[in-house]
Length: 134
Length: 165
Image 1 (cartoon, rainbow over the protein chains, first blue to last red):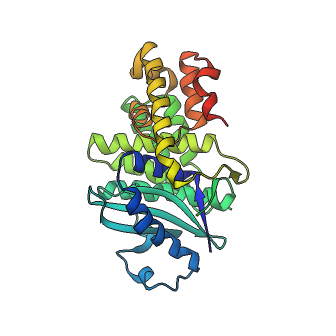
Image 2 (cartoon, rainbow over the protein chains, first blue to last red):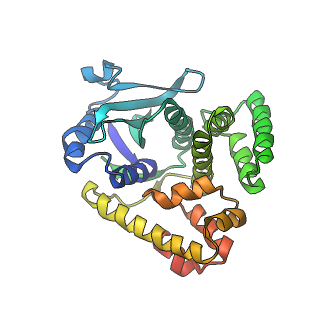
């Protein structure tokens, strides 16, 4: 499965890098290899995707699952020991990397999930910006 | 094909929240853009609900900045996927640094014209959104830059040409 880098992912990663949320080594040793597991296809053959601490469905304000939306999760990550999340949309046989963010409270997570609904609309309509493939 | 569309019942709530926003003095331009977007996009409706239900100023301000971001994303949206250049991970630090240099320079220009409060008043962009814009290394959106340029009648060539490629 192709992994599409969207403008949302680029913009958020720039900010995460600038804020030194993770190092280059952490990106190369952990983040990128974890995300690249999506290349193996969907539903994923990897057992990690059954682990709710690693991967889970996106959920909306009412707790309902957001169709096509998922979160990849890292716990106590980087020097700041943060809860890092990457929102992923799986649609049209591709994985679209959307915003990465630090989940520092429940309100932040709800806001990001609200934005993810908009991302899914834009991806489904084709009105998104594409930065190549991972 | 949109998947998360705002329902009729949610649209009524959008107007109620817009009235709350007006009561606390948010700009009409901002509220109007929020309503316009939240009438269609359920995610923006959710953000308005989160604003309405937030129990502290910090959370409310974060939502306001999110809503402005969504408004500017939509203003820049294209009718089909727009392919932009691939950027290598190893180049991200340099790009983030360039973005911050650009934003710091722009901030100085804004300060010379009366500062953030004046920019908020003239552009209709709420202050929390401007604060996020100037302090984050995220890519500046064309729509945001145009609003800033318009507010102070800034020279487009000098202020935004580097980001319009």
